Amino acid sequence: MYLASHTRPDISFSVNLLARFSSCPTRRHWNGIKHVLRYLQGTKDMGLFFPNLSKEGLVGFADAGYLSDPHNGRSQTGYLFTCGGSWRSMKQTIAATSSNHYEILAIHEASRECVWLRSVIQHIREDCGLSSGKEAPTILYEDNVACIAQLKEGYIKGDRTKHISPKFFFTHELQKNGDINVLQIRSSENLADLFTKALPTATFKKLIHLIVLISALAYVFLVVSFSSSFSCFNTFSTLDEPNLKVYDEHYELRTLLKAASTNKKTVILTFLNEAWAAPNSIFDIFLKSFRVGNNTAYLLNHLLVIAVDHNAYSRCQTSVFYCYLLKTNESSANAMAHHANFRTPLYLDFMWRRLAFLQKVLNLGYNFVTTDADIVWFRDPFPHFLHDDSDFQTSCDLYNGRKHDVNNHPNMGLFFARSNNRTIKFFEFWVNSRSLYPGAHDQDAFNRIKRGTFVKELGLKIRFLDTDYFSGFCALNRNFNKVCTLHANCCVGLDRKIDDLNTALEDWKTIISANHSVLSQSFNWSVPSKCLGSLS
Image (cartoon, rainbow, N blue to C red; front, side, top):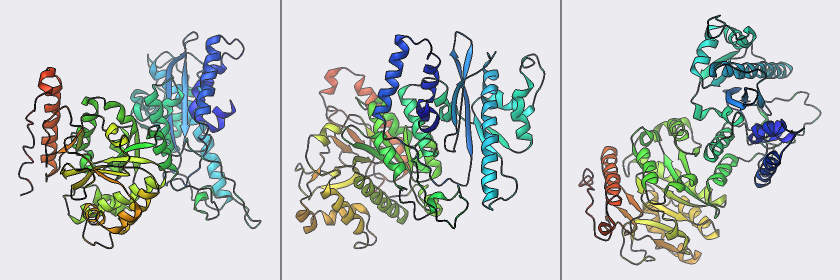
């Protein structure tokens, strides 16, 4: 009970449900308790962490789950606020007569909590001399459109609502007074859903990590020492103090890597900007390929998308389980949001930033496969990576048949790196080589480094991937029994890439729906078509 109320919001609904049977448990309830205990044992490294809150301040989420107690006709209320310990999962005290009714009951409870939290925060600010008049309204997210509309209008004694007690329209008064602003949110993004019902595993994980990202689930307790000269505690700048050594700047990234990685600590990474994240653009094609590929759908559970701007990040959160917003200044993020052609200054800057981020992932102890989003995945490539002991494996534009020959032509569109001392030192040298080769991008620098003495002395084992398996428009493999990935390389122009990648997916679906004899024969791709000659 203590964990559910104070440190582990992820078990709040389960504990609330099981606690109802504490006086008359059955074998089923005892098995449920053991299930929760096993879950806690497997996630005991999760803790409380209070990061430096953004200027948005307090934000809340409210939701209701239908008939968590079907015997008594009671639904479930759940709410969460971005403030330590401010979540709750509870059975409603009366039987609601409609979905609108039980959502009103849920938002009523959330509003009461919101008033108390605003009062506490206001008192702390006043005591510390930080008061600046009336606070801005607290945003409270709800996913029921009818409920939101009714609360804005206030208590109307109509046929459908005349039985609802006026006290449950308390939220309407708070909105009029400017204390709360109730806004709509998609059900899939409503974090309070975690507190109202049993969820599928994928949805449960997604909500947990969304909560981590908005600083409501993954916290770590901080022990703060103050000298006698301090008489008040500024809750809005705790992590800016230099003496708080417990703060981990990579906590969010570390948490996401752990969640997305395989049991061998390997994660798939791709980078996304606004241009490629647009509906029906590159990102949609990329994700679709996992769903239509052969044994590739499960790989989406291990995909971490690195968004370089806020719009790409928002799109990512509605599409995949794990998203990370690259830390950069606003001007850089705005610039990288746009499509950048090969070798342009914007392209070069982005590629070097990407490389520095990948270095960080290796330093955190994770192996990775990084893939451009203009690569479609037809088969699981992991057996090719893991059955070879090379430290670094990269795809090629042109492959000469010798996997360790540095005369191959790598393209860096897809590569695998193991986290070990050799690759960490290599990536550090590679990132720093930007100053040695001004105007070059990471691929140019790699082609110079791979022949140098540093790689030989380091003992780094580099493997160049066979284009029969890791194909592309530069060197197209026509054997469908082998191809794992297909890269829209040797192609300039976003629209051309989109057209030809869509065509490639249609080719794939056509051939896998045909009989097996066709698979034993070479197949004529319909691509490249639009991309053909785009480099000339």
